[in-house]
Length: 304
Image (tube, rainbow, N blue to C red; front, side):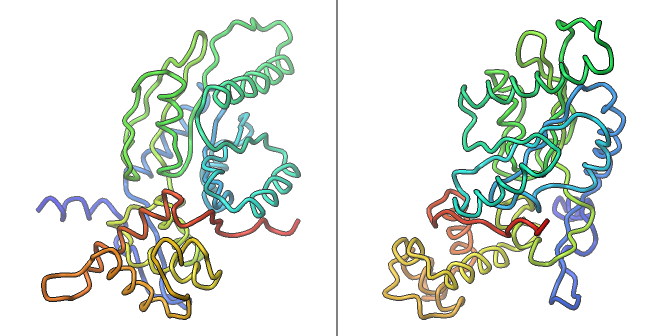
């Protein structure tokens, strides 16, 4: 009964047929509510900090959120850069420098990184305030809003800034359901918000990327989809990490054959010798998300 209740919260068809072979969407009711609340509270904040995933900096953005922000000051924080392909990451760096929105690539929420984020946010806010009112009190409380897709690191960032567990952190997308003000330093408050997905993911491949990056929960899009996509991609790249981690003699094998081999190597077999695909998919996804399968990026910057 509990599972049925949860499923009602999600859009009716998470994976529906289309010309590309399927369509992936995840936009539960609480996200629609969250967008409305975000729009209401934007007038209360000085700047929006938008978190994205460095392995796919554009697809982990959200045009719906961008439209909601409007002319409000914004800084894009592109997290998990240590897990992205360095060559492609440098291309994204060039691309973002040509955009108007301030941005920072980060790989960890260490104190140096946190200080850079706060310092840059303060600079943007003070410049904006001085433009609108040169006589404004510089000591006025600064209020920030954290936005982003699920599992991009919003709650972790706030907890690190606050130096305490001010918000719930979980390795499961969609855990933050409420909006909460958190005092993170003297004169600085941050509004935590639920992770919000785009109402519609246009390209099926983008849904595969977001599933692999865990922006979409594994119980919404079956783990078979992102796990198979990851293995297929790594086979095409002839990944040395794939070969070494799972002890392949060579990579001249199809996706299913590779998954079966991984199941054997990792002991994902039932008492009757059948492959336990549920277990092997979880292993593949866990290894990918932790970086054990090498540095990987999904997509390259658009041509300007």
